[in-house]
Image (cartoon, rainbow, N blue to C red; front, side, top):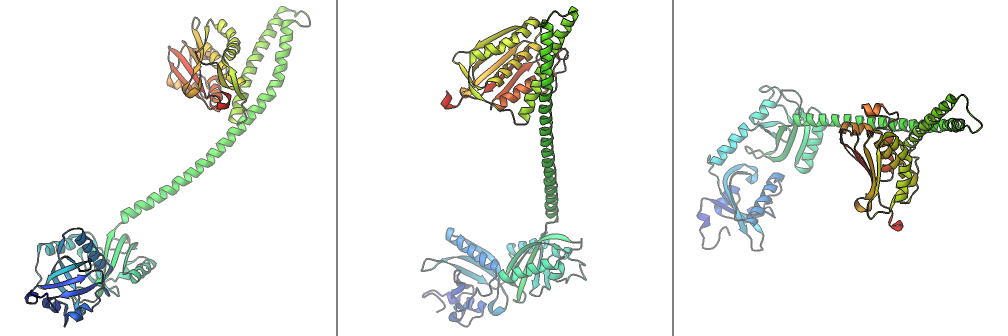
Length: 497
């Protein structure tokens, strides 16, 4: 049966057939279709397995048609080359969906072997001529059957060398073997390789798929090439830069480890030297104290007593500096051990401020203290907390002129923390000077600072002591307007609150 009952489809010059996409077979055709397919009967045509020599590209295209037919009432008008009995026939075709009785979607094909130069065919031919993509049709032995203009321009020796075969295009024979193996296995391949061109070796991205020669119907290979040299060189440059960065990072890690080792050695040396200096220094302080007080009798002449007083004061100053250096060294070496506990706030303030009161009185600076409402204890190492307060107070007094004031207050901080704040109305600092003040062994370059001896460890030591408690140090200061330094210490553990 070659038609539907009551319909004169066999009289039509237009070839009609229904193609089962899932089975890759024609399941119905009129007489015009039998003539195009060169079939003696419908039974003979429907017995043909159209998928036996179908390229992967054609199979994928047909599956896409099927999805479009299922999704919407789609139709496509195209020029196709079919291969009945291995002979090529070019047809103008219209494809649309046809629902089969079992619910599957097939394709109704309307085709005419009368080839017309439609706008679509003219445009596709023009695009093939003007595209920068290099397109070549090879036979299965790799001999070129057709090159578009872009491909001809790229081939070595255009004209005399236009028949260069596919294998000879590859700069590396191993790349060609990989390319050919992929085609043999899957009928298509995609690869980036160095290709010989008139401009020398270039990196091309090649895409190949098996097809048929439209002129003869013989099996063929369609290869398209895109020049990706710039991208490849950029990738190579990126890889080289990445390798350099990794090498630099490795060197920096080595330098960092060396710097850490040097810092630890320095801290250990300072700690050792500070410890060694304290023993004779304690003897100097002790004997000078005995001498200035005349413990074993009057000191004659009296000037010797003045000398002993100066020795005693200088020894105490030197001992304070050494203690600061020792603490900084211990912190940097990770050997400063905290023994945190709950401390009574008022006792801490009284003990700390008493040690600085003499310095404040001598400088003509008024010392004020305050405990805010709702805070009675704070959590930390007793010695370290007192050292934080003493250093902040003495530093504030040092940079506050005669007639000024320094205020110490302890109050609640965020999240249950404790905040120790020391404010003064002294000379103040600009942002650069704040950075210098926090840098160990550096001092602010000002007339007031130059008039006071010291190592410049005060704020740096405070910062380290606060941070090993897990707290933070905040400094707010403006030149000629004073400074406020706040040390925020974490709250005590729940079981101690």
